Image (tube, rainbow, N blue to C red; front, side):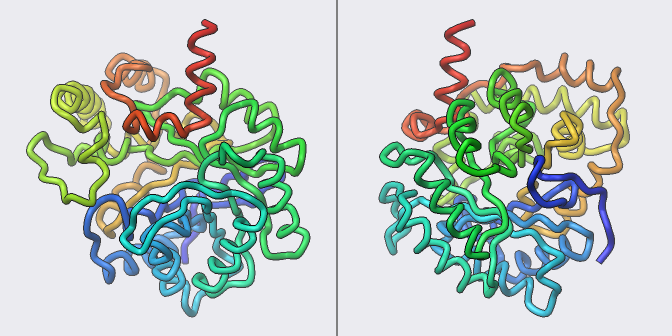
Length: 343
């Protein structure tokens, strides 16, 4: 196992590699994945020095956790930080049945997660969304009980707004907020990110390549499997996709001048937004992982940043990051919308 640069997850959280691996696509939501290649990619990530692996108990209804357990077999568990989201309810056919982050559901979900991951603790445990039926204080309080009992090391949150962050942090220290952050998704910059920084909470940024849009590998002609959620995502539809891919081509010009790939520039931009930000890359294959890791060697100077800002200005993406029904469930977006209205 080699070592990578490290970053600390907030004032109270663990030290992790400066880039993490998000494993969702190995089990769910992006169409079929190759299980053997997924396990090999997880192993390659660990060998390369990535210590932060992010998953959710509902990714493939437990399949993702089982994959990670397989990749961790025979390795030193203490060298890895496992970040797990919970709360989404699903049927055996994969249907989304709602959300439950109540105290009993929280503790039950963790019990099953520990068993699937074959571990006695989770490093960062977090509700995947704010449960509208359960005050955040109750959810965080339940995880705090699990921290006291030694089953969880740190508490994280995901996709919540500034007010929820403050309420949660008043109950128990929060290590990090997991939230989408990319050149195409910058809604957190207005209110959520400043609040997180004020509270000493780091950001683990997912969607740094905007679900593949910013990878430089996406084309207008790409055929999507019926199970790939990008087939329903506004940014991947019709004229929105044409517009967004034009932004990517502008970014590619900058990347080529740097001798880098488009994806590497997009990842390096997120990583460069602050030492308190850890990009999560969703590589499902070893070649994509190697490309993503190359972003750590890329230095963007002020001229590069200005060129990137001109090529892909804040707010230039066409289409929301989720369909309207899902956007309505994002506490982080309600906060951003309110801030936008006030300004």
